[in-house]
Length: 193
Image 1 (cartoon, one colour):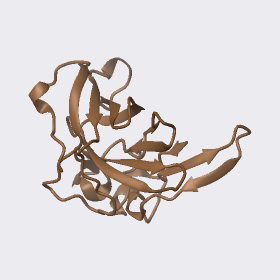
Image 2 (image 1 turned 90 degrees about the vertical axis):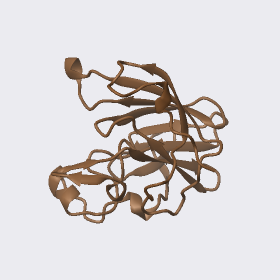
Image 3 (image 1 turned 135 degrees about the vertical axis):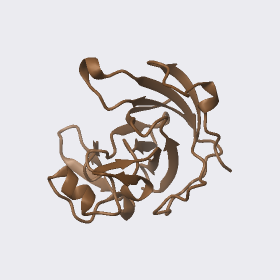
């Protein structure tokens, strides 16, 4: 189970008893949690933005790893505009179930207005990501299903803040809910060595 507000990844047995919690890098956590979203974002410089935590969780196809994708950028990877945290680069964390070993990658959103909502492993290196706007109901106007490939992507484990020139995991559009301005097949971001 992924807890968006830790963020945390927890394992439970069939009876609902917590078996273990997988340690995540400290820079995923805010130091001063607060029930008020605006105060929490204002009071922290590091960690997940309020209500933009580890929204997505998938099991690897071999059942040996969990992959968690942040809904939006961490505070230190985004920029502040008023009370909002904006940015396109989101952390994708792979946790080996047997050892707890971590690898970390970057997924780049199509737009700062979007967020990630689902993740599905297709094979040992490829995943599907459902990216969407932040609206609901009839106001929800845009969805994008993206196939990403982690082969050749840079493992950024231990990097508490992302440098500006870091390349994201390679991606290809699978399906768009609509075609936003400036978006097309050329919008794929190549992975770095």
